[in-house]
Amino acid sequence: MKWLIGIVVLLVIAGFMLFETDMPAAEVDARYSNAASQFLELGDNGRVHFRDQGNANGQPVVLIHGSNASLHTWEPWVGLLGDSYRVVSVDLPGHGLTGRTPADDYSTATFVTVVKALTEHLGLEKFVLGGNSMGGGVTWRYTLAHPDDVSAMILVDASGLPAWRDTAVQTADDEEREAPLAFSLLRKPWFQGIARYIDPHFLVAQGLKASHFDPEFVDDELIARYYDLSMREGTRDATLKRFSSWRGGDQPSWDLADLDHPTLVLWGEYDAVIPANVGEQFLEALPNAELIIYPDVGHIPMEEVPAQSATDVRAFLNKNGY
Image (cartoon, rainbow, N blue to C red; front, side, top):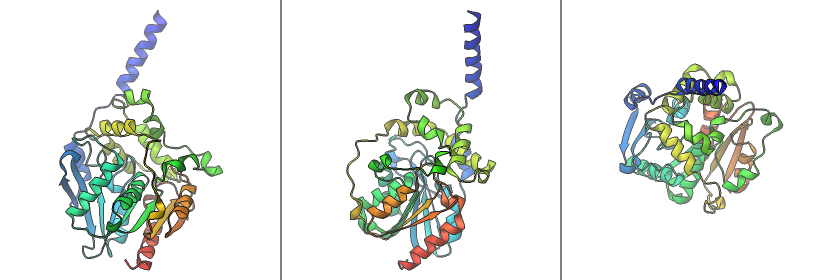
């Protein structure tokens, strides 16, 4: 009995140590907004945070972040491409300073709807559309739904067709690299039951180090940004809703051969989240695509090798007349 009581006491103490409350939205917003931050009221789809930066007269380039990220991931490209291009970035519902929405709908279909509403609000009739990871998946789905809106696509370590998950192959070196724990844990019912209450700092730090080839690149400032945005009031609830609603097998069939838009596919060779051979599958499936694979780079090239990736984007856009 004493042993059992001791275990219970230890569990209670551990619970208190791991428990962490949300950060007030106003506090996080003040910390991570800037003079370029704007907000678009979309009713049930929330107050959407976006930035419209760079050359106001340049070719518009709309950029969409990945899962558990934010528009801040594109800021290196804004600085490197903004002299020539109008760079629009957005926090999707459940992310960044958009956060939890009244509809509590974080499906890809809703993300496409939000991007459509934003581009219409900005009066963008034709634009280059790009995205990283989940945002790359939103990019090609948006283009299938609204092909006349998009002049070209940029897919950065993008999520692909659901069927490709079974054929995704890690390199031998990548098999030794740890994938982000949070992505697998958040799909497990037992973890969903406690994730709303625990401090995710370890998972945030581990996920960032797993997503970048060089763990030394992940400094305290980067971890703090991802952590604070994940702890913004309501965001943990939104994240749990999104992962618990995810279904792997009931998506409609998409034919990427319908997308003849010029497409630049960028990939980190050592992507521990979405293996580089998925980039090769995009190259085969898309009729007008080119692929660049970066050695010694992970899942987020625009953060890890911003200068090289931005140079490649500029060359691609120039070649296609943008």
